[in-house]
Image (tube, rainbow, N blue to C red; front, side, top):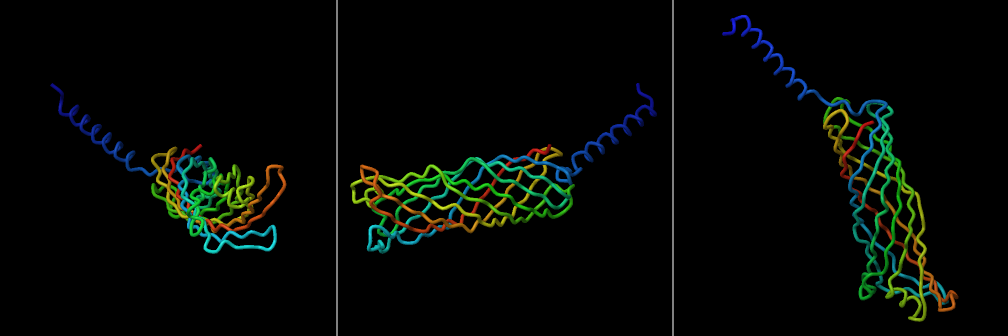
Length: 246
């Protein structure tokens, strides 16, 4: 049988161990301090608050506007990545990138009968300066940010129905979409799971528009028509991700 002193020592040790375990569970994670580097990977969802100008033929003269014509851009999803460097406990810089999303353009108004007008991939890497609220030892840390992005497009493909419209059914057509710089407004929150891992969600808004020039060619490759329009995209970008500190 154990002695009373042995039982007392065992009870004291058990109590101390229990308090130590509780302290470890309750202790906040310090994964967002000055000098920290965090890599995030996750899901970008892009929703466009879009509008468009009527399609206008500028060549051959005289110019002609398709009254009531328009287009709409659907939402898109893609893989997103981000690298964040904490310069202080509260201030960081983030580079956002990812796989370029593929946007689909559909006709609206008098162009609605054409259905799908085309597709394009959008490249929009961004640099965002963020201010993080609270202390780095807190598990929940909201933040606000402002930044800039450079937007350009690739893999621009026009549907046969739109090509037929701009060439009178006698040729093919391609499109040029203008690139541009645009500001980024950003809000978000990070939740630290431990000293290395975290979960984050952010929402960004980008006021963005692009000029589109559609060039029609005949079978010999000679330019036979030019059409212009302007597309306002103004995307809201949600980013749900998991982060790793290194």
